[in-house]
Image 1 (cartoon, rainbow, N blue to C red):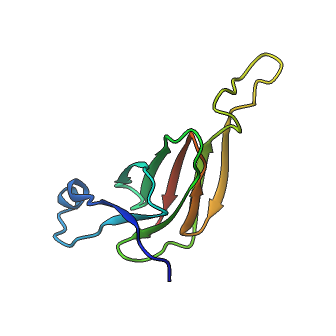
Image 2: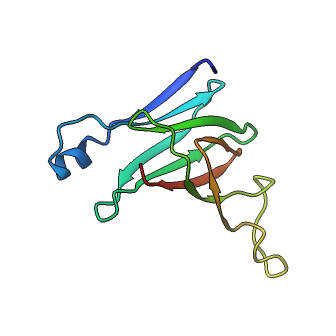
Length: 124
């Protein structure tokens, strides 16, 4: 078992109130090692999917993390990420797709590359 060095808890309280539920259904991202991520989560009221948006603002450090929804590890996580190898990369007429959104799938253990923006979507 990995040791928890930092934990970001997203209470989703407004969503619970909107659905009239009293239970606690937090989304948590446990980060290894202790690094900073900017995280926000919401729930799609039509599908029940949980959507988590994560920014790794570090210029140099990737961040490994585990995602939990309501205490469970989601196995099918859809992921969209914007990232480039260098923080100085730009799109140009010669390379219009140097920085682009890449769609993929993941499990609950996710590495967020340095200077990246990632959107996760899963159905708990």
